[in-house]
Image (cartoon, rainbow over all chains, first blue to last red; front, side):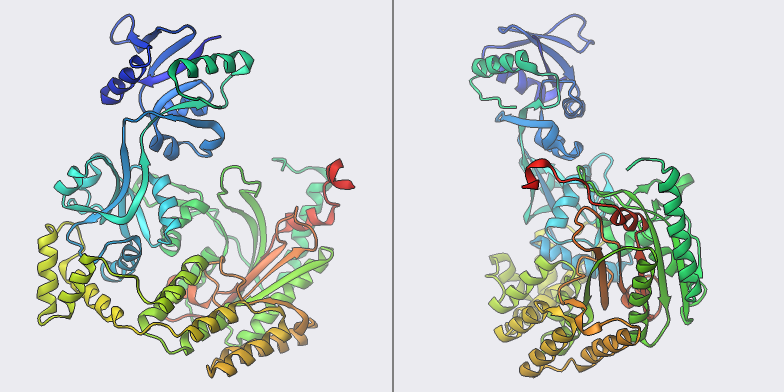
Length: 234
Length: 392
């Protein structure tokens, strides 16, 4: 039985994914017309490869249309409600590291923690007449985090484009964004809160728990796990 | 739940709604209807982002603000009342579906019927509280609801205690603000007793600047050093907060007895008569005066007695009601006894403070309650069969 594997269709994530498989004896090669998202896996039997955009992979895994997929943990947690029931983050891959963090203007020397932000939110409303705004592309994760930290008096702004530019553009007071080195944040005069780490994300090899597995599928999965030298438990 | 009710089930519900409508109107509450979809801004402003976890919000049409499927009737009814003037006494009754988002996998309904009442502007709060509970109990009896488990609370006591205890205004303000988030509230108390955590080097430097010779300049200089000003928040706001932080750092810790008194008061639970006695004893022992709040509690019990309810025996829980965000006084919930398979049949409370956030210049007396008619009908039927293993 063939297992379907969804992989990122472009960019650095694709390069690192292909390198990861290649290091484990599986060569992923594009087939046919370069404009088609078709590929095949060489070095192992019964693995069908589909190239998809990063956003599509969590969704297809959740729908049970992929057995396996490579995608960022952040995308799974953000976009798939009830994800634990539908997706298994089976193996961290050691690349695609990105931290989702809460950041404020660096010149807010009176704000170091989420508790500080909470107090500032109250004072901000009194002074400016509207709630403190936080720009992000990760509303689900940010709301859960703010709620856990007891911060309620704020508004989320869906950031189109560069989230880090929002305070400068006066479209938000603070941001919650993905960062790796922190350079972009610093360049935009922003600083991460001491307790502002929402999620440390990396690329994972994921399993679609609701896909058609059956005994054959589980056997194939065990074989793949052995080949990769990585446990893969549904 | 089936999407469509038919036959006997349909008639039973229609009858229940008609009974409640007659009862509430007969008691002097004016029937009102409200839109299902309304502008969400007021609600979002009231609850912040938390509301998105509980309400269905939609983009507005043609550039208007977001719209919301009503999660309750209270906000639209009270706002409409206020639009015609807050300085009036009025009583309203309503019936209809409300819409609440639930967490994925939850079995709670996202749409259910409410039949409820709001009593606005009655300065005799004890009488209005008692009248509300009494009417709901009467209504449940009229529906044949069966044995009930009533829980009551009075958040006014905790607030009165916070007012009466000597403490820096800032601390009192934070405790009031986070009262509805018990974890945060108790953490704040712990922190108040233990003293503030060791400040970071950056915080220490900021506090030093704020305590120095020219604090505004010193703090502004630190800010400028740390980064370019970006965003709407301005340097003078940062200076103001730094000065507040410096003051707060000088605040004496909360005496442990004070923290223990707050915790002991919130732990009071039992028949209302006993609870009142215990609260009087606790506060008298501690030399803290919250007599007006306790007298109100006593007056409410007397009013409940006059309404034919055995008030002293009503179950009371001082910590109850803290998840019902806008309640600040009397609160209650009524469940079908021993029926965990059915949602609470009714609930309500006093929410004077919320009227201010809805636009009143000063808080207006406001108390209300609602019944879930579908839950009452479900409670009238036998519980679902237990699985075979549980039978033995």
